Image 1: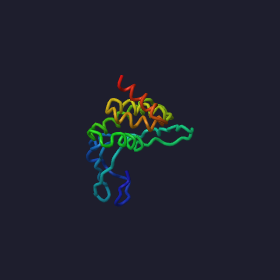
Image 2: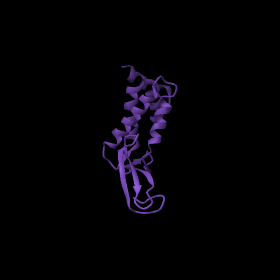
Image 3: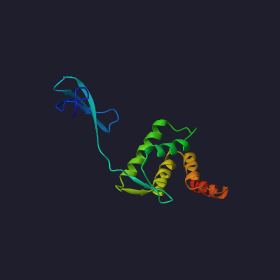
Image 4: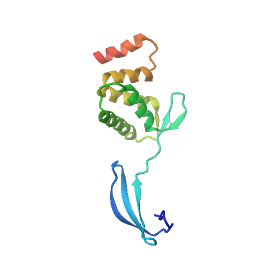
Length: 149
């Protein structure tokens, strides 16, 4: 690892421990030339996941889009933020555990709806109404009847 202060390539790891986020390793290093210390983070490199949209265009997976959809669905609902974050983490785990390089957005939408149904019924209906593009009240009522049964 190159020293950020003097550019020397001979550095030593002094200490290693899990970072606060639990997904990376925090390493304290010391430069052999200038003796200054610095911190680096080591993270597992993941294979980029490509999402196939409804119009067959492709884009790279973006966790922020799932977070935004779930947060909008849970807006003003009595759902703790910690539960929302756990749900988003579980959704992401489900998506990546499929070990596919490309995944249709429809599959992701179904995964999100499945988890929202367990989290909060109103949030589920909100998300479904946008995701399934309810055209009229009858389709909305049909979805509500499914939940009530």
